[in-house]
Image (cartoon, rainbow, N blue to C red; front, side, top):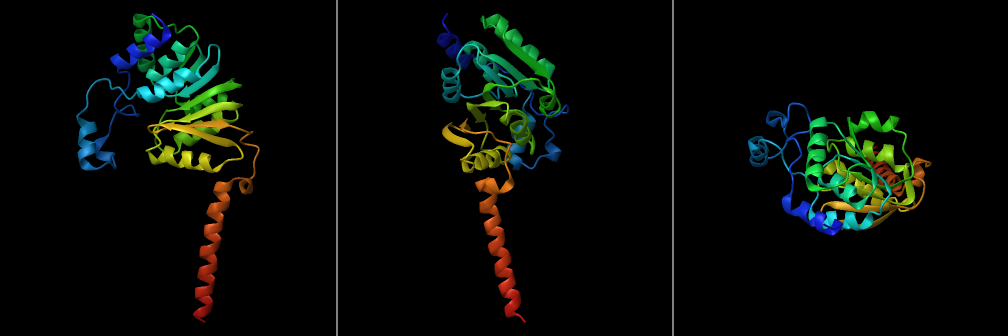
Length: 242
């Protein structure tokens, strides 16, 4: 079976690898800020879930991968298998060893070669600062979604990504990721927004990222200008009151 056929079989089967929540206790309904109906839905779930990428983005990712690319993702699941099918030298970082084991078991049963895949069972904020890896062609951020984890994942991988490489943010409909995407779209000296596939945004790195002062980032200048206008208005109001 060729790679494209294996990919389509993966989308048809939609294997479920994921826990319901990101904490050891699972989904904690009593602490959730979700609307009641949505909260009750998540609380009703049992067993493994399929939180994997959708076919439109999965096909884009598959087309972007070339054999022996150096790639990395935070999170693991169907996307990890797509990197494997594409032949990348890939590192996937996620906290739970049982999810990693389930991915390997599915790959073995489906004829997907995982010999070039490094599955690291660790919280990303702990392992990324210590990881000896650079020259990445693709970084896919899809790990913990609570603030500030997506930004931490971005921070620790942005300068390990090659100029010309792709930085991909999943679940931009969640604010913790959406604000990061907005920043990158504004930071045109260093990032070029390429396209979106559903709630997944794709960027090309165009320059080094962390060798920068605050005033070199358009995002900060826009915010500062607004702040300065508010301060000036307050000063004018104060002077009129005298």
